[in-house]
Image (cartoon, rainbow, N blue to C red; front, side, top):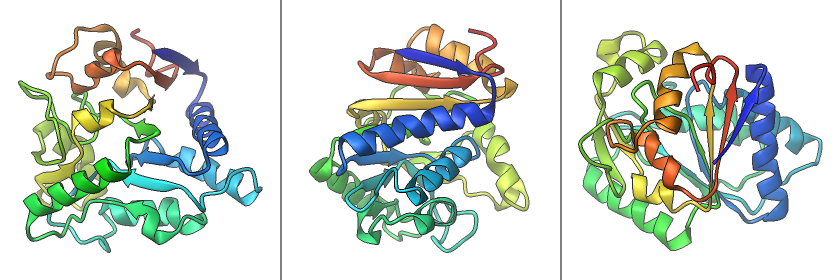
Length: 241
């Protein structure tokens, strides 16, 4: 595991963007695993800049998003599908058919999980998986539990996650209680993993995940067992290492 500590969120984002850009340049048909939330936003903006400058090309890139809220339309501004289109995909030249995001509006959620897992298995493994980390150590929506969830599944969101993500909704009561997420196995099968965290609010969980014992109570701790992980933090997130 390589840990990089930066002076600011902007520097963290640009360092992360350079890792992704290098992957694209070295393997133009890479499969990228992508995350949402506030942490990677500036990284996506930086990648858009690199694309517009002609540094990188997304024509042959395939993407798989980690997760999506269940019982939410892809057109909803709170959906991760909307987030990805508005903040990244609409600004680059990736073919729409190469974009894979779980259908949060699926009526048969079990079938949606099976099909998403099947497509990832047929095209994968992921070359580079980008991750954020939740307040309880979740990666994707693999929540704190007594076991590591294996495959793509419908996850019940914990109180910590609901509280942390409620800022994106009008109220916590409007927030979905479940989400489709790829499992720990598919994350760990990725050839390379890039974990990002910023802010003092992530300091405790980063210390537990990177330096504590490997436990499903802190799902991100399993990354200690992966052969190729780059962790990029700002000074605040790294302050308790």
